[in-house]
Length: 267
Image (tube, helix red, strand yellow):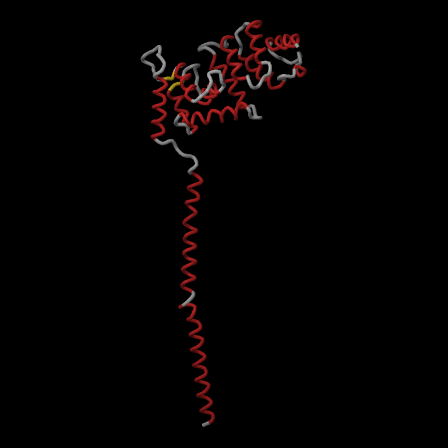
């Protein structure tokens, strides 16, 4: 009897312990686990969904030109191309000199400011006082589709080209100006065109630009060769205002040699 009673007590104790263990294992499933799982799943899903949005925003900075933008440029072109009385009435597909001057006026650029040349340079205009439809459409490459944007970007171009420590693009603009200003079919540029172009390009760069232009007009009096044009830029960048840096042994064009001699006599 004693052994049987003891055995029954042990069986009851084991059954009770088993029930407690079972209840303990089931508790997280009922109360905390679903809540935690839902929170974790929601957070993971939200984080994953945001990644494509971030990538999209970083690549959307480069905005393609829309059809409305293209229409704006077409309207601007028609507006300024209609100003000039074209010599050939069958060829009206360009903005002439008067139209270019009106465009400069509308964006507050002085006719004697380098800004006009910079616009022609950026748009890759091939003939002086002439801007074709295709050349004008190059504004879209700079995301410029109206006058407000053009007015804003020209000073930026000027600062980047003229005032930059790196003179690579400035020299490219300077060299371009010779080809732009010379008359069609010519290999030289007349004094009439060279002098005002030098003043526009070098007014802020060379202390003696007026003396140089006076010398070209009154003493030299010859059409300017491409070699002389290009080397004058190098002269300004290397010798500049300090004539002590000039050496007769360097292979400068005769125009520059004679100018330095004249300038030294005046000093």
